[in-house]
Image (cartoon, rainbow, N blue to C red; front, side, top):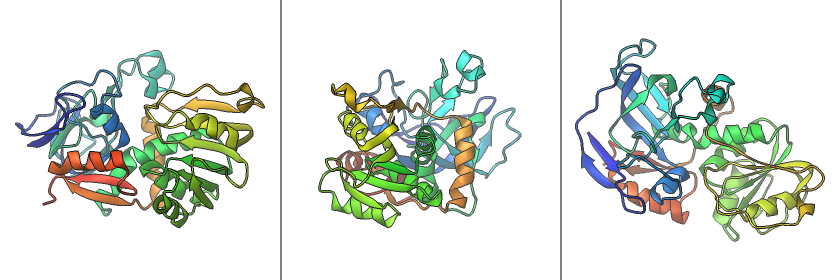
Length: 330
């Protein structure tokens, strides 16, 4: 098998030939059809997240076909298409798992971080954390749903029943969430890097009622805001944009420090909360909603060997939507 491997943080991925792994009991081996590139992958590669299991194969938005079954995986069949997300395994018995909060598990494994992920031709996954995907859909289009879609869905739930929602950072997650909000008849206000007319026009094309720079004040107060950009200074900006009782949700796994701000920004029962990882229930809910909402992802395919180029383009904001690695792409 071929894999793009992170051997040292802040270093380029290395293309390696490896023996095909065999799945243990309760695991599946997949032939990867597509794996989207997430900002979390950047945080792993750039050393923003502590303690990756090195060497590791990044990638956690995996679409693949089952090509080998471990013992005890009778619910799957050879050739079936499944998706594998960031949350790759939980202990099942800590207080968080026992109370339905497996996203906060005390002993989790994360795909592409503490177990090998999908920047490869094949990957082994815990069958309990793999999800059937539509056979008729394009694998490249499905891949961003496995994290950008899932974490966006969880962030939207955390925002509550807001009717006017600000999205700060218009990348892969926001372009999916905008479509969900439009389907739910919510009004989206999109905030991009100042002067990024391309992203602003993209947001409007997906249903945003307003789009502007993150340095701009929206034309009306917001019920809630979701921050996808890893920029802590946006927290006080978003707090000033939400109305009384409004909520600011930080949807990323990593963010730069939040600067000091006056208490009056938070007063009148405004709230700040974070979103951590996802649960399998999030995946079941969102993967059922996506076809109903007619979610269409904007993707830029790259061959597997161009993973470093895809990461660099994501870091620089050179494309809209999501980059997707395709092992069989020439």
